[in-house]
Amino acid sequence: MCMMFFMYLFISSFVSFALIMILVAFFILGERKVLGYIQFRKGPNKVGIAGLLQSFADFLKLLSKSKVAFFQGRSWFSWLGVGVFLFLACGYCILYAVFGCGTASNNWLLLFLIITSLTGYSLLSIGWGSYNKYALIGSIRSSFGSVTFEACFMCIVIILGVVLSGYSLFELSVSSWLLCLVVPGCYLIWLIGMLCESNRTPFDYAESESELVSGLNVEYSSVPFICLFACEYLIMYIFSWLVSVIFFSGYYLIVLFSLFHVIFFIWARGTLPRVRYDVFVEYMWKWCLIILVFSLFVVL
Image 1 (cartoon, rainbow, N blue to C red):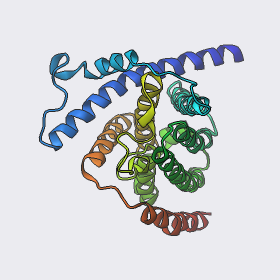
Image 2: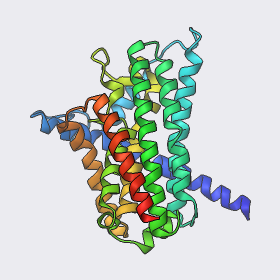
Image 3: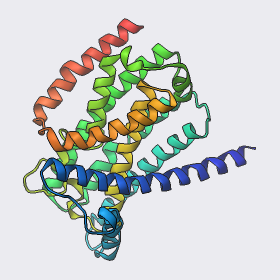
């Protein structure tokens, strides 16, 4: 029985990963089109009908590129970082599949925190393996930002656990509606946190060096670049879905607000300026974290 459950979970996770990857292809295309119109240009419109096949053409182009690996001592570290980042994305897909198949895991949100904690290690490994000191500096800055928001995520999850008397996401989705009206502060901080965790504007500190054009993956190509780029968008989708489940719930509301948060990622990249790093860190540790800890004591 246990073996059948794990087989079912594996198949569900694999199908979820494949479907989300297809969604990611159109997510990237939609982002490029929307950013194009924001900047008064067309965006991709040549490959296929209205540019619908542009992402698949880019995928084939990247696969055709090659790079000589293991010619320096640090090459294995870059592959380790890519592997950890891919494992991180697969972990999110497993959690997504667990929720989708109706399995009521009593510690779903705690498992989410465990998987999120791997982000800093993957970012450091990717930056160290780039052979670029600016990418390394960006990875250190980005990983510290990730640690900052992991502390905030932890406080928010504990507050949700106290309010809802458990950490089961499935039970949360069927027993609570519009939780964002009950804890609006947690919702706003979670929005900021998912932008930072996904390395998106205005918290894309891995790309804030003027010498970089692509952040941590500036020295990557072919399959490693595809893994890093696609998994980043996969994590954006998972966070968009998760924030909708936690703070809105209801099947139709989850679908609607998942789309809203995906558009929110694109809008933030197209309009918001990057926040200065020292101001961001000071604000998070001095104000947001203290407010969350105080709120936790009030709830308890």
